[in-house]
Image (cartoon, rainbow, N blue to C red; front, side, top):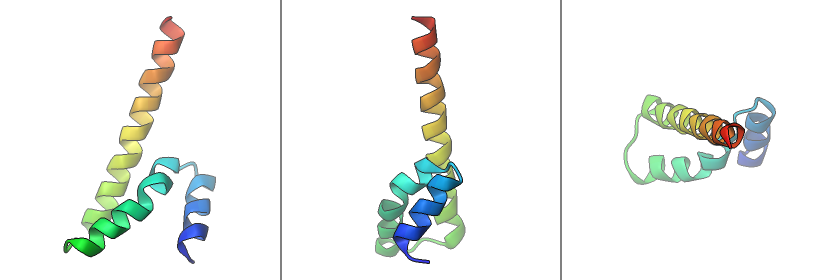
Length: 64
């Protein structure tokens, strides 16, 4: 599976936050020695942050 296919699959799984930062995180993992678990942890944290921000934004719109 290449990078484009992986990004498409992530979006299909509704993991758009990971798909958005995947290439950046892969470059980071190559530039500095990063254990696979650390890379996965960063990706999951990015997804959780994105979801949290979107939820907060939706609540702000509803409150207005």
